Length: 373
Length: 248
Image 1 (tube, each protein chain N blue to C red):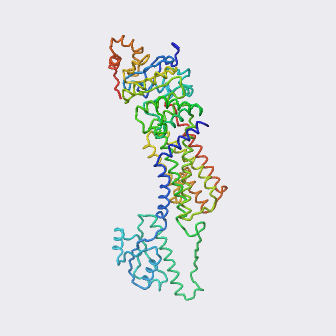
Image 2 (image 1 turned 45 degrees about the vertical axis):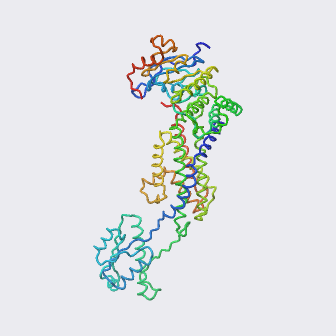
Image 3 (image 1 turned 90 degrees about the horizontal axis):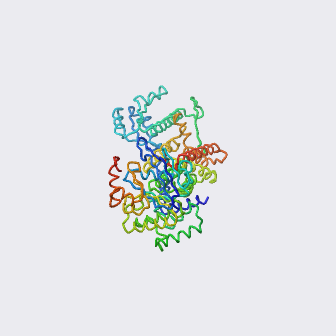
């Protein structure tokens, strides 16, 4: 106990004397939380639209107007041939082409149906997917409109349609910041947890001070705890600063309790710190430990559901996310913050994290050797 | 006190893959002795020392340090020894006082003992008023003297010093050796490696390692006599020239 206290004292003194730690502690959450949520927005506006109108009729102009007035599209190109419209796609001037055939209005009036051709530049998959979805809904809207016009009797609709009206639960205004901020907080805490402690141990290896520890009667678990606890505290401080920014700047107040978040965060950090410590037992230089922890956190973050929903990943990737502690924390953060979930709702997440904690820390203690082979 | 061995080494070897760093060495170190462990760079001195300190597992042979077996009781050995590695090993971002407190504390000294030790150490090294200086800000010679004093702060049975005076000026080296003599007078056995042959002459007995083997072991005077040399320098050169292994 006394040895542990000495180790903690030493560590905290060293941390308090390292100016870079304090810079990272305050500046990193500020920058990440103030810039990223505003920039990382899934909603796509300003899709550049090219229109090829062979019809030049009232109806075709009406359709074009409707597309532009939706706010999602910007008319960038108005062409008479598909070939030249395609050329502007190649030049990256437009993202999406709508081709209106020459007999559009007449066919629509006489044959009661007509066709349109939509071509999407799918280099940016998200943009393409959303763009074509928007355009489809606008066109079906347009279709409804003109049919109603023809009919004059809104009570009688010869073509029964099912109208979908949606209401967005838990995030009623589809505010992406509310969705992103909890996730970014997780990323932040993960980065601090996985690399700070690891680097610290490897630094002792580089300086040679670890040898002095290894030649002393300090026990392995004392040494590991001596590293784990200070960085656990540090990450909790960063989490708190982040929560504070989320509240003040974005007015994000968790629907659930702060207690649930902190409880989960404290277990989560033990797991992530354990992973960092494990890396440090393998790495010989700070460079190695930095690169490896960078690599791992990158994969963890990309496969965490922060940027792309886990549900839309292929099955094998979904299985990988089950072994990714970050994905659990992001889910829990969103559940607690947006849905107001309690401890009972996240019990399986807690169990999984306890598993990770045990695995990583046991492995780290076993692999940390005071004596080389 | 005579001939009471505190280190007993028999046929100790260490292989790294195909490379034999330490090749079948045997020797005893007696209690209270200043034992010089000489050899060219790469001769295997540090490896041998690390095995005795419990930092490295021997490949074969036996060794007992302070009455404990290096294979099974290495954690017990650690309570009985002090170690000063080739690389400077105090915490540069802690003050002198904090370093003393930390290292004394992990060997189980009480707060009262630590306070007393700190006072004595500061007085002996003339560090009055410097207790709160970060170690980083001290000149190398001071650091080495402090590192040595901290390595023996818990009054170990044996202290292992790995080239403690490398890169230190002659005056500080002399002061350093007077600290060693003082520790030896207190009954601490000194196991020291060095490249300075004048320092070798300060030792009670020296061994000279060549290519992982101990080629000579005796008092400096006896070694000079056997090799018909005027100084330890000449003895060392005669023996070390036989080395086939390249130094690092």
